[in-house]
Length: 376
Image 1 (tube, helix red, strand yellow):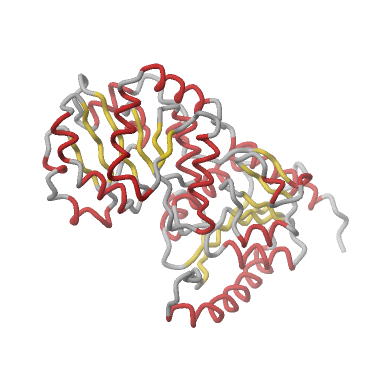
Image 2 (image 1 turned 45 degrees about the vertical axis):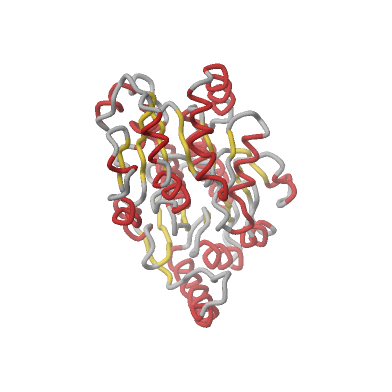
C-alpha cells in the first residue's frame, strides 16, 4: 500500500481549537505523502467552512449544532439535525470511500466518526484535552487509535489504543528565536517596559476583559508595565472606550494578526486554558497565568490548567477571582526572576513540536493497513 494513493477524511471544527489541529494534521500528512486525497467535513455556518478552503482543502458541511446544556428551544431541533447529519455523513463516506477518518472534535465530528465506524472504516481520534468529553469516550470504544496530549488518559480509553502525541499547533509559533524586537516593533510597544499579554481566544473572554477594564489603577500605578490586550472582535465596542483601554501603556486589539510576534514580545501571558492554547504556550515557553473558563463541558479547562500547575509549569487563577488576582499574579512573576525562569523551563519541557507529524504517521499506518487487506 505504501506506493498507493490514500484518501483521508478529516472532521472537526466549531472553534480554532478544533480547526487548526485538523489543518495541521492534513498539512503533515501531505508532507509525508504528497499524493494523498483529502476531504474535510464540518458544520455549516462555523469557522471551518471558511478556514479549511483558505488552507487549500475541500470541505462539505453538515447541518448540525450542539446540544444546549441550559434549557433552550433550540434543543427541540437537535434530534432532527443529528439524524439528518448522520444520514449525510454516511452518504459522504460512501461516495468518498476514505481509508481513514480523523476526528479532532466539534459538532460535525460525532456524526461523521459514528458513520465511519458503522461502515468499518478505521478511525483516529485526536483528543486535545486532559479530560475526554462524552462523545469521544463513546467513539473511543471503536476507534483504531486515540492521539492524546496529557498523561493518565487510560481512565477514558484502552491503553493499547493510546498514542501520546501532543496537540498540533500553528507552525508560525514553533520558532520564536530572535523575534522579540520584531514583536515589540510590530505592536508598537515600549522596549523598556515589561509586557503582559492578555489573550482570551479568537472570540475573546468576558472575564479577562472585565478584569482589564476594572484595573485601570493597576496600570497607572505600575508605569513600567505595559499590556497587549486581545479582547476579541465580539467585545471590541464594549471595551474600547473604557478607562484602561485609553491608557498609554495599554493596547487593546480585537484580534491578533501575528500570534508568534505577540508571544515573542510578551514577558508573561494571561490566558484561558483551552487545549490548543496550552499546547502553544508549552512551545512558546513563556511564564503563564491561566484563568480557566468555567463555561465548558466537564470543566475541562480547569483540568487542563491543573495538569500544568501540578508540574510547576503555570500559575492558576480561578475565574471568579480574576479581577482581584489576575494582574497581581502576573506582576509577581515579573518581579521574581527566579519564578519566571522556573515557570518558563517547566512549561517548555511539556512542549511537543512534532505533534502533527506524529499523528500523521499514525494516520498513514492505519491507511496502509487498510490498503493491505484483500479485496472482497
